[in-house]
Amino acid sequence: MQEIAELQPKEVWAYFKEILSIPRISKREEKIIAYLIGFAKQHNLEYKQDQVGNLLISKPATKGMENRKGIILQSHADMVGEKQAGVKHDFDKDPIHAHIEKGWVKARGTTLGADDGIGIAASLAILASDEIEHGPIECLFTIDEESGMTGALGLQPGFLKGSVLLNLDSEDEGELFIGCAGGTDTVATFKYKTGRVKRNWIALRVVVGGLQGGHSGDEIHRGFGNSIKILNRFLWNANQRFKIRLVSMDGGKARNAIPREAEAVILVPAGSLELIRIYFESFLQIIKSEKERLEPDFTMTMEQEGIPEFAMRRKFQRRLFNALYACPHGVIAMSQEIPGLVETSTNLASVKHSGEDSLEIVTSQRSSVESAKQDIVDRMGSLFKLMGSSVRHSGGYPGWKPDTDSEILKVSEKVYRDLFKQEPDVKAIHAGLECGLFLQKYPDLDMISFGPTIKGAHTPEERIAIETVEKFWLFLLEMLKQTPEVEPGA
Image (tube, rainbow, N blue to C red; front, side, top):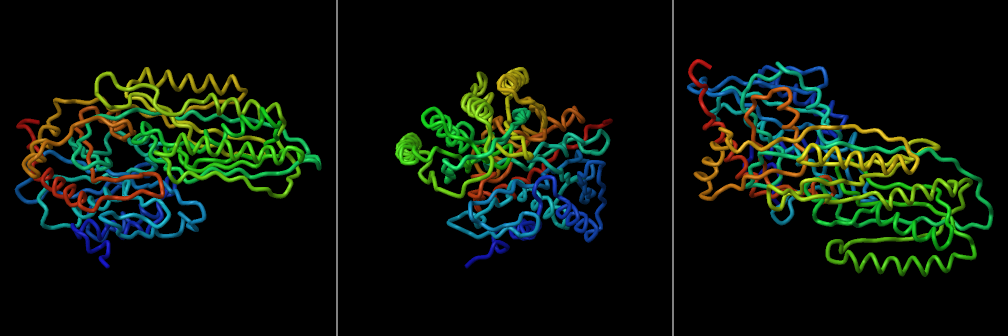
């Protein structure tokens, strides 16, 4: 059986395999940063860190390339940590266990971290090589891209010297990205009171699972099921029929992932147990019928369990059920300028207990139009305030406006045509990239984003297409060779 480190290009896959062994989920990137610093020392390369933790490793131009514009290869150091139900994996300690399957590399029951581990691996392969031609290079490894882009937000003017930035964080080979959506998180915190549970109640655990999930930017338009919305739909209707009591509710993991799993513990009157079982089976068939094409692995179970001591007060649970039912999820508007591009969306990402008497709902909004982004953010805030929660907005980042006259875009189009005898697809993306934040600090940067094909990012189904990594690598190497010269007098 072929090993990952034996795949082509070997130099990239070898580093990718090393990266798989290093825990690096968002906000806990200290081990991967230490590894990268060790790499810089081993190869006698200059490096520096800024005040928020971003790392920059620099390498001088190869002989004869000193007159080329400085190029920045940028990737993010962190990854999303998601796993399938029942999989035992500690993202703070355990390596990612990857394997080859029908032309893809994927992990066993967890996210793979190809987003953006493959960008890191390609950067290291270039830094380690004595044979690759290139002008002055800076490799920028940002922290915390996946949970708020705080690394890019904290990047300061003067940290970078290059004038051309290649973002290695896109997920469709053959596509060159020149724009992206901006985003903001809206977080609602509900305070609640509990009451003691009487003896004439039955406790049931309701679990939704088996959904595809996916990246809330790349895949929000595909209509995949949202586990929180499905669970709450059941709870809302059950409350109308049987006057249930809510004990707990939990669903979703990452702010930028469509939630795949959710569960709640409820109480029903003992005399209504058989009736709610009948209703549950009816509801299950309705959802299966609605989602049969998009969610073939959807599951929903309801099992009896021990009676808890306390449950939420009815007044609060009605507000919660109504808020989640009214909360929009999915595409809000399509672009009027770029056919097929989602302009504005919102993702109901997670519901978590944030203390003994509080529940936190996390949503994320995206738009390539700043005013439309603010509108959906305000709409979300208004909804949750009406339902009695406190609201805060966080993680705001700007979009990246496409520049069709970009010099590096023209170079990249020609390089792609010459290498692969076909036209690349130049487009914008609804997912967020750090490029918009870089432009705020470095307004003269000339940028494009590209990468190999990655599917199922932010889910345990994340996988990377092996053949596209070689094309990504060849394209990157030729881009380094073809970096424009510095203009005389510049």
